[in-house]
Length: 140
Image (cartoon, rainbow, N blue to C red; front, side, top):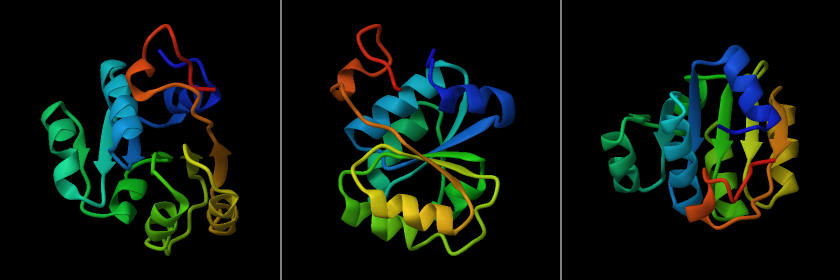
């Protein structure tokens, strides 16, 4: 099980976690969360990339807004800031009480998310996707 603060937050307050972006890192995070017994909502710009995760038990969202609205903890696992910016542009709502975990490079996302009222946590990735959820990698 994850030993980081974001996961402790999940255990305390949110039965469901959203993962925005289902590439290599996002898919590894989703599988780890599902394996830990969490309900996971997923959204990806290319819908077909989430198909295998939905088959594995994740819940599909029709939009970033729907995914983020489904929980108080969302992981943004996107490949670059352009993708992050496109996704954040869809969040035209009050995010008070939300926590967004950014698993990419980009301080501008922190400014946008906190301006909407959410708490922002930036999570660095120091392991290849296949190591996430193993004893060889931690999310910190």
